[in-house]
Length: 83
Image 1 (cartoon, one colour):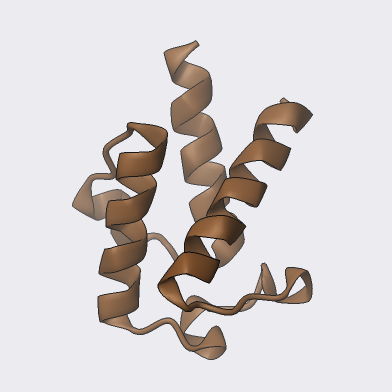
Image 2: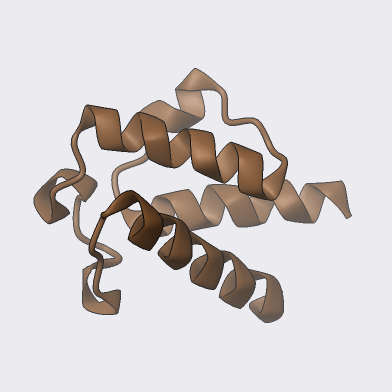
């Protein structure tokens, strides 16, 4: 499980970097809005995550995304259910 979480975190960090979303590891529990992620950024982030990880996030899951860690946890859970 740790390996999956580490890979997800690294990939998410890379996606954020490519989208121009700067996130420091100390901010992973901060609200996405507090680190400058607006609604358009969130849509772009979700689209890239879905494409990169070959998963689908339903609107109810997207509504629950408050922090970077929330997103990481949802991705990790979806990937583990595929195994």
